Amino acid sequence: MIEKTLPLLKYFHALAQTGSFTKAAEQLCISQSTVSTQVRKLEQVLSVKLINRKNKHQFALTAEGESLAQEVAYSFGRLSSQLDGLQQVSPSSAELTVSASTSLGIKFVLPVIAKLRQQYPDLTLHLQENAGSKHFFEDKIDIATNYGVPDNTFHSVYIGEVEKCVVASDAYIKRFGIPKGLSELAQHSLITQSHGKQEWQTLFAKSDVDIDSLDVLSVSSNIAKLEAVQLGMGIGLLPLYLLKSSEASLIILPEFELQSLRESLYLICEKRRKDEHKIQWVMDKLASECQSLLTFDNKG
Image (cartoon, rainbow, N blue to C red):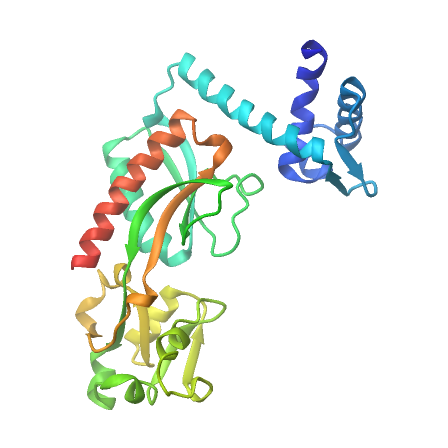
Protein backbone atom coordinates (compact mmCIF):
# COMPACT_ATOMS: atom_id res chain seq x y z
CA MET A 1 0.00 0.00 0.00
CA ILE A 2 2.67 2.53 1.01
CA GLU A 3 4.57 2.01 -2.25
CA LYS A 4 1.49 3.07 -4.20
CA THR A 5 0.31 5.90 -1.99
CA LEU A 6 3.57 7.67 -1.12
CA PRO A 7 4.26 9.08 -4.62
CA LEU A 8 0.66 10.33 -4.81
CA LEU A 9 0.60 12.08 -1.46
CA LYS A 10 2.62 15.08 -2.65
CA TYR A 11 -0.17 15.98 -5.10
CA PHE A 12 -2.84 15.70 -2.43
CA HIS A 13 -0.69 17.64 0.04
CA ALA A 14 -0.16 20.52 -2.40
CA LEU A 15 -3.88 20.62 -3.21
CA ALA A 16 -4.94 20.58 0.45
CA GLN A 17 -2.40 23.24 1.44
CA THR A 18 -3.13 25.67 -1.40
CA GLY A 19 -6.87 25.03 -1.59
CA SER A 20 -6.66 25.39 -5.37
CA PHE A 21 -5.94 23.13 -8.34
CA THR A 22 -4.32 26.11 -10.07
CA LYS A 23 -2.00 26.96 -7.18
CA ALA A 24 -1.14 23.30 -6.57
CA ALA A 25 -0.23 22.92 -10.24
CA GLU A 26 1.91 26.07 -10.14
CA GLN A 27 3.71 24.87 -7.03
CA LEU A 28 4.46 21.46 -8.54
CA CYS A 29 5.18 22.87 -12.03
CA ILE A 30 2.63 20.57 -13.66
CA SER A 31 -0.81 20.94 -15.23
CA GLN A 32 -4.07 21.16 -13.28
CA SER A 33 -5.32 18.02 -14.98
CA THR A 34 -2.29 16.10 -13.71
CA VAL A 35 -3.01 17.19 -10.14
CA SER A 36 -6.64 16.10 -10.51
CA THR A 37 -5.65 12.76 -12.05
CA GLN A 38 -3.10 11.94 -9.34
CA VAL A 39 -5.54 12.79 -6.54
CA ARG A 40 -8.16 10.52 -8.17
CA LYS A 41 -5.56 7.74 -8.28
CA LEU A 42 -4.91 8.22 -4.55
CA GLU A 43 -8.65 7.98 -3.86
CA GLN A 44 -8.82 4.78 -5.90
CA VAL A 45 -5.85 3.22 -4.11
CA LEU A 46 -7.29 4.08 -0.70
CA SER A 47 -10.90 3.35 -1.73
CA VAL A 48 -11.81 6.59 0.06
CA LYS A 49 -13.28 9.85 -1.26
CA LEU A 50 -10.92 12.64 -0.20
CA ILE A 51 -12.44 15.66 -1.94
CA ASN A 52 -15.87 16.71 -3.16
CA ARG A 53 -15.46 18.35 -6.55
CA LYS A 54 -17.89 21.26 -6.92
CA ASN A 55 -16.75 22.10 -10.45
CA LYS A 56 -13.58 22.07 -12.53
CA HIS A 57 -11.77 24.46 -10.19
CA GLN A 58 -13.52 24.25 -6.80
CA PHE A 59 -13.51 21.47 -4.24
CA ALA A 60 -13.96 20.80 -0.53
CA LEU A 61 -12.13 18.24 1.58
CA THR A 62 -14.22 15.42 2.97
CA ALA A 63 -13.86 14.49 6.64
CA GLU A 64 -11.45 11.74 5.60
CA GLY A 65 -9.59 14.17 3.36
CA GLU A 66 -9.28 16.73 6.16
CA SER A 67 -7.89 14.10 8.52
CA LEU A 68 -5.39 12.83 5.94
CA ALA A 69 -4.34 16.39 5.01
CA GLN A 70 -3.47 17.21 8.62
CA GLU A 71 -1.50 13.99 9.06
CA VAL A 72 0.39 14.41 5.79
CA ALA A 73 1.26 18.05 6.60
CA TYR A 74 2.58 17.03 10.02
CA SER A 75 4.55 14.09 8.61
CA PHE A 76 6.06 16.11 5.77
CA GLY A 77 7.10 18.80 8.25
CA ARG A 78 8.78 16.23 10.48
CA LEU A 79 10.49 14.66 7.48
CA SER A 80 11.80 18.04 6.32
CA SER A 81 13.23 18.66 9.78
CA GLN A 82 14.89 15.24 9.84
CA LEU A 83 16.43 15.77 6.41
CA ASP A 84 17.84 19.13 7.51
CA GLY A 85 19.38 17.36 10.48
CA LEU A 86 20.91 14.62 8.35
CA GLN A 87 22.42 17.22 6.05
CA GLN A 88 23.72 19.07 9.13
CA VAL A 89 22.29 22.32 7.81
CA SER A 90 23.04 25.02 10.35
CA PRO A 91 19.91 26.99 11.31
CA SER A 92 22.09 30.11 11.37
CA SER A 93 22.29 29.86 7.56
CA ALA A 94 18.52 29.55 7.12
CA GLU A 95 16.48 31.68 4.71
CA LEU A 96 13.03 32.51 6.08
CA THR A 97 10.30 35.11 5.64
CA VAL A 98 8.90 37.00 8.63
CA SER A 99 5.55 38.79 8.31
CA ALA A 100 4.50 41.81 10.36
CA SER A 101 2.35 44.92 10.09
CA THR A 102 4.01 47.99 8.58
CA SER A 103 4.73 49.83 11.83
CA LEU A 104 5.69 46.73 13.79
CA GLY A 105 7.86 45.52 10.93
CA ILE A 106 9.73 48.76 10.28
CA LYS A 107 10.16 50.05 13.83
CA PHE A 108 10.38 46.80 15.79
CA VAL A 109 11.11 43.66 13.76
CA LEU A 110 13.54 45.15 11.23
CA PRO A 111 16.02 46.38 13.89
CA VAL A 112 15.98 42.88 15.38
CA ILE A 113 16.63 41.32 11.96
CA ALA A 114 19.52 43.75 11.42
CA LYS A 115 21.06 42.74 14.75
CA LEU A 116 20.72 39.03 13.97
CA ARG A 117 22.29 39.58 10.54
CA GLN A 118 25.34 41.08 12.24
CA GLN A 119 25.60 38.13 14.61
CA TYR A 120 24.89 35.49 11.93
CA PRO A 121 26.08 36.72 8.49
CA ASP A 122 24.74 33.63 6.70
CA LEU A 123 21.23 34.10 8.09
CA THR A 124 18.71 35.58 5.63
CA LEU A 125 15.43 36.87 7.05
CA HIS A 126 13.06 38.58 4.62
CA LEU A 127 10.50 41.01 6.05
CA GLN A 128 7.03 40.93 4.52
CA GLU A 129 4.63 43.69 5.53
CA ASN A 130 1.13 42.33 6.01
CA ALA A 131 -1.56 44.05 8.05
CA GLY A 132 -4.34 41.64 7.08
CA SER A 133 -4.93 37.92 7.36
CA LYS A 134 -1.85 35.74 7.27
CA HIS A 135 -1.84 33.08 4.55
CA PHE A 136 1.33 31.19 5.39
CA PHE A 137 1.39 28.71 2.55
CA GLU A 138 0.08 30.96 -0.23
CA ASP A 139 2.28 33.95 0.72
CA LYS A 140 5.31 31.81 1.59
CA ILE A 141 5.39 33.10 5.17
CA ASP A 142 7.46 31.12 7.67
CA ILE A 143 7.02 33.18 10.86
CA ALA A 144 4.66 36.05 11.70
CA THR A 145 3.90 38.47 14.51
CA ASN A 146 0.43 38.29 16.03
CA TYR A 147 -1.48 40.52 18.44
CA GLY A 148 -3.58 38.60 20.94
CA VAL A 149 -3.60 34.91 21.84
CA PRO A 150 -3.35 32.92 18.56
CA ASP A 151 -5.83 30.15 17.85
CA ASN A 152 -4.73 26.56 18.34
CA THR A 153 -3.93 26.00 14.67
CA PHE A 154 -0.65 27.88 15.24
CA HIS A 155 2.45 27.27 17.32
CA SER A 156 3.20 30.45 19.25
CA VAL A 157 5.92 32.07 21.37
CA TYR A 158 4.92 34.89 23.73
CA ILE A 159 6.99 38.06 23.41
CA GLY A 160 5.37 40.50 25.82
CA GLU A 161 2.89 43.32 26.28
CA VAL A 162 2.85 46.30 23.93
CA GLU A 163 2.13 49.43 25.96
CA LYS A 164 0.18 52.36 24.50
CA CYS A 165 0.42 56.07 25.25
CA VAL A 166 -1.47 59.26 24.42
CA VAL A 167 0.85 61.68 22.63
CA ALA A 168 0.84 65.08 20.96
CA SER A 169 3.47 67.29 19.39
CA ASP A 170 4.99 70.14 21.35
CA ALA A 171 3.58 72.59 18.81
CA TYR A 172 0.06 71.18 19.20
CA ILE A 173 0.21 71.43 23.01
CA LYS A 174 1.46 75.02 22.85
CA ARG A 175 -1.46 75.91 20.60
CA PHE A 176 -4.31 73.97 22.21
CA GLY A 177 -3.07 73.10 25.71
CA ILE A 178 -2.88 69.82 27.64
CA PRO A 179 -6.25 68.09 28.11
CA LYS A 180 -7.14 67.26 31.72
CA GLY A 181 -9.30 64.16 31.81
CA LEU A 182 -11.40 62.43 29.17
CA SER A 183 -13.97 65.21 28.84
CA GLU A 184 -11.31 67.72 27.78
CA LEU A 185 -9.55 65.14 25.60
CA ALA A 186 -12.80 64.62 23.70
CA GLN A 187 -12.70 68.29 22.64
CA HIS A 188 -9.41 67.81 20.78
CA SER A 189 -8.65 66.49 17.29
CA LEU A 190 -7.92 62.77 17.61
CA ILE A 191 -5.88 60.69 15.16
CA THR A 192 -7.04 57.13 14.55
CA GLN A 193 -6.19 54.25 12.24
CA SER A 194 -8.80 53.41 9.63
CA HIS A 195 -9.82 49.74 9.64
CA GLY A 196 -7.86 49.39 12.87
CA LYS A 197 -8.81 48.81 16.48
CA GLN A 198 -11.37 51.20 17.97
CA GLU A 199 -8.93 52.43 20.62
CA TRP A 200 -10.45 55.85 21.25
CA GLN A 201 -13.88 54.28 21.61
CA THR A 202 -12.44 51.80 24.12
CA LEU A 203 -10.77 54.60 26.09
CA PHE A 204 -13.97 56.67 26.26
CA ALA A 205 -16.27 53.68 26.87
CA LYS A 206 -16.43 54.19 30.66
CA SER A 207 -17.00 57.94 30.42
CA ASP A 208 -19.99 60.13 29.62
CA VAL A 209 -18.40 61.29 26.38
CA ASP A 210 -20.58 61.04 23.28
CA ILE A 211 -18.32 58.93 21.06
CA ASP A 212 -20.21 59.92 17.91
CA SER A 213 -19.31 63.58 18.46
CA LEU A 214 -15.52 63.04 18.49
CA ASP A 215 -13.40 64.98 15.99
CA VAL A 216 -11.49 62.07 14.47
CA LEU A 217 -8.99 62.04 11.60
CA SER A 218 -8.38 58.59 10.06
CA VAL A 219 -5.05 57.52 8.56
CA SER A 220 -3.89 54.23 7.09
CA SER A 221 -1.39 52.91 9.64
CA ASN A 222 0.40 53.53 12.93
CA ILE A 223 3.31 54.99 10.95
CA ALA A 224 0.94 57.48 9.32
CA LYS A 225 -0.63 58.16 12.72
CA LEU A 226 2.81 59.01 14.13
CA GLU A 227 3.50 61.34 11.21
CA ALA A 228 0.15 63.09 11.65
CA VAL A 229 0.84 63.63 15.36
CA GLN A 230 4.31 65.01 14.62
CA LEU A 231 2.75 67.43 12.12
CA GLY A 232 0.52 68.78 14.88
CA MET A 233 -2.70 67.51 13.33
CA GLY A 234 -4.04 66.10 16.59
CA ILE A 235 -3.53 63.76 19.53
CA GLY A 236 -2.72 60.10 18.91
CA LEU A 237 -2.78 56.77 20.72
CA LEU A 238 0.48 55.04 19.80
CA PRO A 239 2.49 51.99 20.87
CA LEU A 240 5.56 52.96 22.88
CA TYR A 241 7.96 51.23 20.48
CA LEU A 242 7.09 53.83 17.82
CA LEU A 243 8.31 56.70 19.98
CA LYS A 244 11.88 55.50 20.37
CA SER A 245 13.25 57.66 17.54
CA SER A 246 10.62 60.40 17.74
CA GLU A 247 10.09 61.19 21.41
CA ALA A 248 12.06 64.47 21.27
CA SER A 249 9.27 66.16 19.28
CA LEU A 250 6.40 64.52 21.14
CA ILE A 251 4.87 64.93 24.57
CA ILE A 252 3.41 61.90 26.34
CA LEU A 253 0.24 62.77 28.24
CA PRO A 254 0.33 60.66 31.44
CA GLU A 255 -3.16 61.62 32.59
CA PHE A 256 -4.95 58.64 31.08
CA GLU A 257 -5.28 55.01 32.22
CA LEU A 258 -4.41 52.79 29.27
CA GLN A 259 -4.09 49.32 30.83
CA SER A 260 -7.14 48.11 28.90
CA LEU A 261 -5.42 48.98 25.62
CA ARG A 262 -2.29 46.89 26.20
CA GLU A 263 -1.84 44.14 23.61
CA SER A 264 -0.10 40.79 23.93
CA LEU A 265 2.43 40.18 21.16
CA TYR A 266 3.36 36.71 19.88
CA LEU A 267 5.45 35.08 17.20
CA ILE A 268 3.58 32.34 15.37
CA CYS A 269 4.21 29.66 12.78
CA GLU A 270 2.15 26.85 11.30
CA LYS A 271 1.82 24.08 13.87
CA ARG A 272 2.96 21.49 11.33
CA ARG A 273 6.35 23.26 11.12
CA LYS A 274 7.04 23.88 14.80
CA ASP A 275 9.49 20.96 15.00
CA GLU A 276 11.62 22.14 12.09
CA HIS A 277 15.02 22.95 13.57
CA LYS A 278 15.47 26.18 11.60
CA ILE A 279 11.99 27.41 12.57
CA GLN A 280 12.61 26.65 16.25
CA TRP A 281 16.02 28.30 16.21
CA VAL A 282 14.95 31.48 14.40
CA MET A 283 11.79 31.88 16.49
CA ASP A 284 13.83 31.55 19.68
CA LYS A 285 16.36 34.14 18.48
CA LEU A 286 13.68 36.54 17.29
CA ALA A 287 11.66 36.15 20.49
CA SER A 288 14.69 36.75 22.71
CA GLU A 289 15.74 39.91 20.88
CA CYS A 290 12.16 41.19 20.59
CA GLN A 291 11.57 40.61 24.30
CA SER A 292 14.68 42.62 25.17
CA LEU A 293 13.68 45.44 22.84
CA LEU A 294 10.08 45.50 24.08
CA THR A 295 11.18 45.54 27.73
CA PHE A 296 13.55 48.44 27.01
CA ASP A 297 10.86 50.39 25.14
CA ASN A 298 8.24 49.86 27.86
CA LYS A 299 10.64 50.98 30.59
CA GLY A 300 11.96 53.85 28.51
